[in-house]
Length: 266
Image (cartoon, rainbow, N blue to C red; front, side):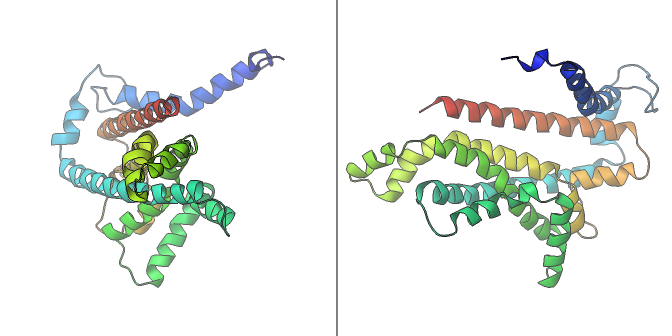
């Protein structure tokens, strides 16, 4: 059986896709170290724009937006991970029950629905119940759409854990609570941590839903960057975008490594 490398044009298409996907990121990263004020002409290597992010005239705005993004991402990730853990336990350990397939579809629905549709629907829902848009609406929206991202690695990890561990604990007179916290949860830990990291970075990087439900005067880091870009692309925007890219890559890599280590353990 031939491998994919033997198909004519496969390598060229792969390289083209990689260039289209990652070429712009490499350009933004490279020009974030540009010493010139121009975003197209190279003026030598410099860290001036990274310093400008923290000390420049827009620094207070970015600092406030970053704090909002960080606190929302932490709370959304914690809440989504707890809900996803409970959902995974119900789906994987509760046996068959009426509506199980529908429940699974509902959990994963945010992954399939276009984000713009979710954003509009969320905004309409908040308006219908009379909830003023702002910090709270962003947090509630983030918790909702982060649940499936946390659920997937948790469910995958739980699926790989044999229920004999729990049965052995129950045979030794452990209660359900004790068998969960002392046996099952430590075994699930890699999946739970991986789910938390994914939910955190998804919340931190979100723009579309946040932009719809944030309200006037409320900014997160992605919306603050977008607001600055509308006034013109400046080198400091490339610097802060590179910092966000680095954080995203770090968290996704950690999530992958922790999840892979969890799959290798019993």
